[in-house]
Image 1: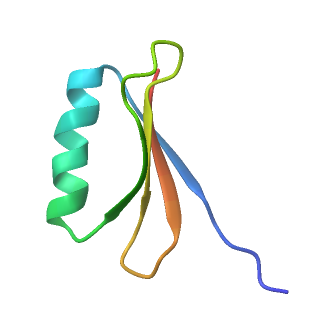
Image 2: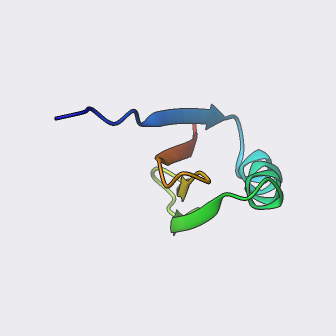
Amino acid sequence: MPQQLHLDLTVDSVESLQVQHERVLRLGGRLLLDRSDDPEEPLRVYADLAGHPFCIFVT
């Protein structure tokens, strides 16, 4: 069975998360889950053009 790669990317603020959100959508990514308002661990999960998931976290 082929393994699927999952990337976790980080940014340093919720503001940066929003900037990258707009960039991902502009490049054709699709938002799967939005937890940007989570005070403990703000993040968003996306799918790339081929459907592979990746996350952007605030650290």
